[in-house]
Amino acid sequence: MDVVLRPIEATDDDVLFELMRDPESVRTAAFTARDPDDREAFDAHRARIRARTDVTECAVVHGGRLVGSIACFVVEGDTEITYWIDRAVWGQGIASRALALFLDLVPTRPLHASAASDNAGSLKVLGRAGFVVVGTGTGYANARGAEIGETFLRLD
Image 1 (cartoon, rainbow, N blue to C red):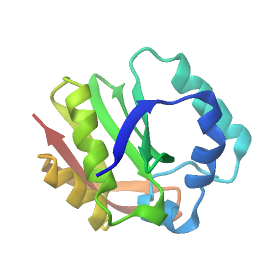
Image 2 (cartoon, one colour):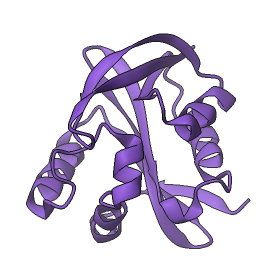
Image 3 (cartoon, helix red, strand yellow):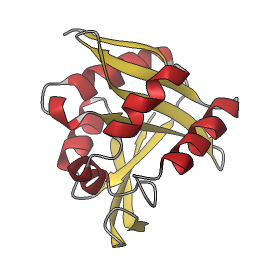
Image 4 (spheres, helix red, strand yellow):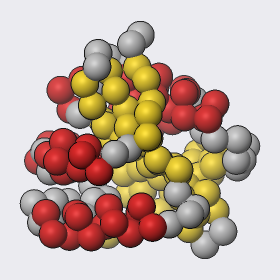
């Protein structure tokens, strides 16, 4: 499969912004920015990410086209992983391949992840990579304007 990871460049922000505001993707991810259409907030968020030294992030490229991003960052001492893949390529194994490549790149363990409990696709990708469910809870999902189920996972 033709999936590669590369450093994210500032010129990628336009594509990433568009990917991260797709309504169906936003609803599925659930735990998103308050307003996915707010470009100013997106740019401020990207600037904060670039300034952090505890973030490892990569662009996900498939067939020579930027189709998403994957990153890990530290929250309250735990390293968490996140990814976003263009809905146009869901179901093609791209998220699974990107995650496998990223796990080879980042030796930190344990890694933590979370997903909306009804986000079967993301939970499947994480499970295939060896993440195991360590708990569930509820959290406020901006994309749905409500508290929803959240599943927490860890890779040792």
